[in-house]
Length: 399
Image (cartoon, rainbow, N blue to C red; front, side, top):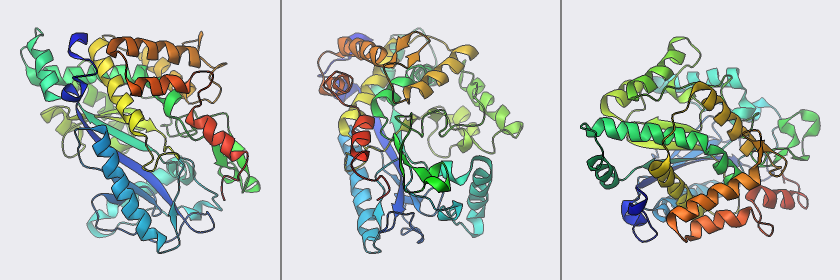
């Protein structure tokens, strides 16, 4: 497979991009806005968990830049609208000062949509409103049909749909195993207003031990570590269904996992089994406060290169213990100290990151997107989390 990828043909063999950005609205004082969602009928700017948390969705694009451009377009529309109210978009994954849980009003739905409101009340009760106010970016990626058919043609398989599903199942396992690298490179929320930890600390800029609070052990996770089956798409869906049957999860959307396999159309398990995988969703991306859209195009280009590198090279099958270890590594990848933190029990995060990035660079050759990531881990480089930390030392986080 490595022969079909290089810096010249990656744009032809790459897949399609779709982005979702969660973002909070804040008032002029820097607190949570208490006005209704401004776009009740917009397909690209919808409500998320709470009334003051918007989700900005793009269509499907055949380039990273195209997806970023649309994300920026909708972000600007939202920003322009709320500016008229004296509000602005919050630039961070961690929320601003929260006076009380009342600052986080559950998104209102009525009539036929009442179920969405009730579901959010359930999440608020189970996980707490504060955790649900953490925001991030989801990246949806579809492998190129041309590349999949090329790979299928050179395989011994006879059923293309089954081959395609198996390719995504293998990719999901690889992204779970290497998810710590995404956290290491893209985490950008080490600072949080003290009100997140207690009323007595409101207004204090707290530098946590996490590069990403949202992706760390105290972040956006279920109350248990899910174990999924990757033998085939039926067993994968069945492993999620058993959590629904037991009442451990109320719906598929409650699976707070960094990697999801999704069908085209309704995100239902029967749709996934009947029609197969359409795309993979990565959910462990922080909002980048230094990028106008919340995401740097070089980071998105790198994520595609990582996906295709895994697709071409990853052959492992994760056991139950491997999945638990991978999740532990993911949480460690979200820690701030990357020189003392060890993954797999023996390798410092920085060293491990440079090693894997070196392997990826050898696979593709010279690319700006990979060099951009390597530079974050060099002596003169600086991760987003370190930049945010430096700024917080000069300016109060919640003002």
